[in-house]
Figure 1 (cartoon, one colour):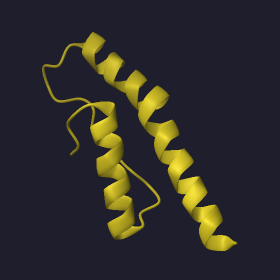
Figure 2: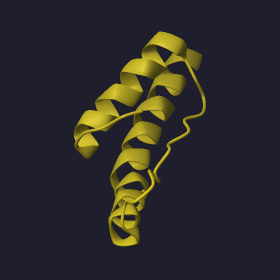
Figure 3: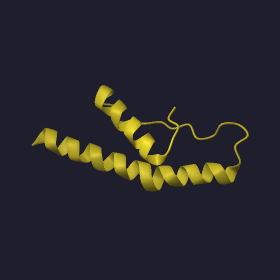
Length: 67
């Protein structure tokens, strides 16, 4: 489970990627009792900030490794 700012979560995911080389990431977003508006905001941050940054880094790394 990753907790923190989008930037901290990006760093954690990329660190894990460097260690394990994983190709998938599963995020548990709903922890009982969290209001839907807050969950929606977290999903928006994952989609707009975290995923694009992780994809950009991993695509660049993959390209460098295959050249």
